[in-house]
Image (cartoon, rainbow, N blue to C red):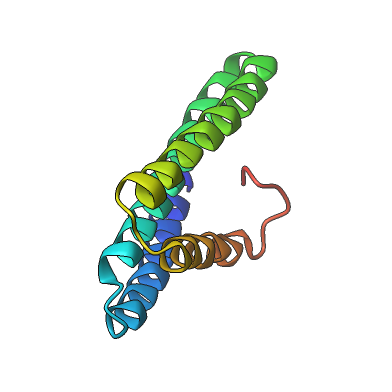
Length: 121
C-alpha cells in the first residue's frame, strides 16, 4: 500500500511539475522551472523513503519510528534550504520559477492525502 501511495504521489507531483515547467518554458525560464522540479522530486522521494523506514522501525519500537520522522524533517529542511541557495545564488536561476514550481508540486501532495485519516496511512 505504501509503495502504491508513493508512486501515485510521485506521478501527481511529477505531472504538476512538468505542466509548470512547460508554462515557464514559454517565458524562457525552463532551466529555473526544471531546477524547481528537481528540488520537488528530491523532497518527495526523501519523504517517501523516510516514511517507509519509520514504519519499519515503528513495528519494533514506536519511539524510534517517530525519531526517524523528526530527523527526516530536519534533514529535508536543511537540504532544501541548501538546494534553494545553490540554485538562486550560485546558478543565478529565476527565483519565481524555481519557488513556484516547487510549491505547486508540494501542493500536489494534498491529492495523495485524500481519504486518509493519518499522514502515514
